[in-house]
Amino acid sequence: MADRPRSKLAAAMAAGREQGRRLTPGRPITDHVPTGGLADAELSLAEVEQAVAGGAPLWRREWAVTVARAAERAGRTAGDDALVARAVALQDALHEQDEREIGPIRESLRAQGFPADAFRAVLDACPTHERDPLVRRLLRVDRVPERVTDKPAGMVHYVASPLDAVLEICRWVGPDDVFCDVGSGLGLVTMLVALITGAEARGVEYDPAYHAWAEARAAELGIPRLRYVQGDARYADYTGVTVLYFYDTFRGTLLEELFVRLQPLAEAGPLRIISRGHSNPVLEAVPWLEVVSRGVAELLVMEAR
Ligand SMILES: C[S@@+](CC[C@H](N)C(=O)[O-])C[C@H]1O[C@@H](n2cnc3c(N)ncnc32)[C@H](O)[C@@H]1O
Image 1 (tube, protein in one colour):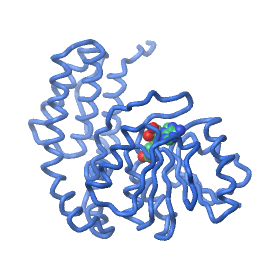
Image 2 (image 1 turned 90 degrees about the horizontal axis):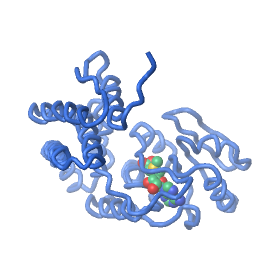
Image 3 (image 1 turned 180 degrees about the vertical axis):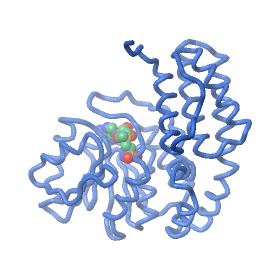
């Protein structure tokens, strides 16, 4: 039988279940088989309600909030206010559970000035499959604000780098480096690089809402050596930067355009470029860069020749 086209909600729920299966191999995540549309949203919200009532662990709350967000979007699209209200209330309840658990850890780290060893100890005490959701909640970048700009052609929307990639990036950054995340989103990578390596970390972000979110988090958490600039990364000033990171910032010609501008920077001093995602093949073709590492956490690390 041919596959039926799936709704966005069904796809999101399937992705959530798949993620859950990867986190806990062999354990069924849900008995519900989605068929698409609002009926799916109703059924899946019932499961989320069970998770909330049962005080679900962090990895399951991560799944539950993904489903509740997808149901909210489905409700908005269909103009179903009751469904939207239910989905939003569940997200708030999940957020409250997160804060009860993670808020005190954040407060303790903040009070100590986010020392790298204390942060590392928090990570080490956390099961591997809960580290990404923990870090996003610790740094308060787990809820993505609405974009205020339309995404111009060739630009990619916000998806956060996974923790394993950021930890690998940190191996290529020293305390004297100036790191820059090109398309820094909510600031997750810059915050982690600054607090783990002690380097100065800069972020350039096009969308003012994402930029403002990153600035507010940096101020609220008190992580030192962070600097955010709002604007188009193609025209930003990279003077002094020694490590640049691209995670799907933009595609094709936009990236090539920026690299023409970056060449003088490489001539002025050491420059390392780290990339993840669709930018990798484009960067591999840049003649003045050579690959020094490939594949770890899906990263490509390059240095100017
Ligand atoms: C895939 S996200 C990566 C976010 C972050 N670097 C990370 O790894 O967690 C790409 C980001 O690049 C931003 N972006 C896209 N085009 C941009 C441009 N021309 N200038 C600055 N930021 C841009 C998007 O708004 C989005 O936040």
